Length: 146
Image (cartoon, rainbow, N blue to C red; front, top):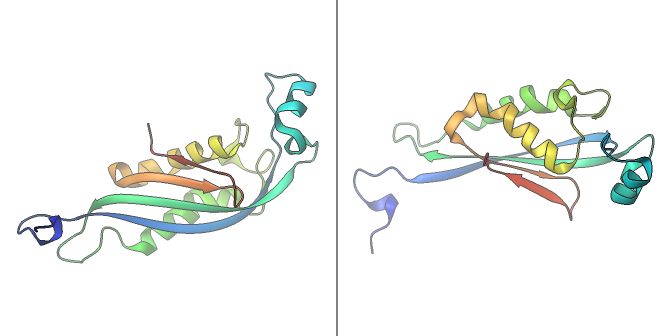
């Protein structure tokens, strides 16, 4: 049996993921809804002063392994980009009030995942495969730029 990695002249496709963590507060609130509707939809997440999470962010790149270096991208390049483009703007901040990156969005896990994709995409282009944001151990969102 021949595999892609053993076929002469082919470059294996690899998925490289970097995981980072950050702590942030937010309040879920839609200006399109009444106060009663916001409280009914978001529950305790709509409290006036917000609440916090210890988020886990996973950024996955996809592409061919460079035959010269044996890597897709140096992981320190991925680490540094995540820190510069995302973590410096969200870690230990209130996302509704203290994060220019999140300005103008309702910071749901869904919206944050798309926001983070948009921050990273210019840096990584077609290599960016997926952004996954874990808000809790039970709730997370994935986005692949669709």
